[in-house]
Length: 43
Image (cartoon, rainbow, N blue to C red):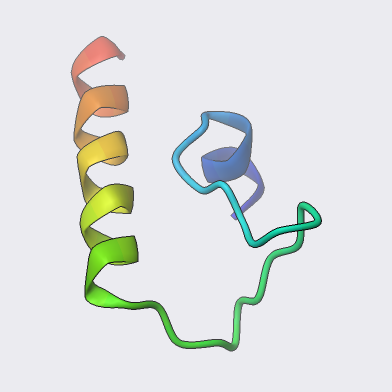
């Protein structure tokens, strides 16, 4: 998770918190995938 947060793929919850055991919505997962693909294309 650290590398993904550092790369801007994961933004966390309000207060700059991560909740690794929590559930992600479909919209959140879509946003993560879009940011991952954009990051992957830059590398």
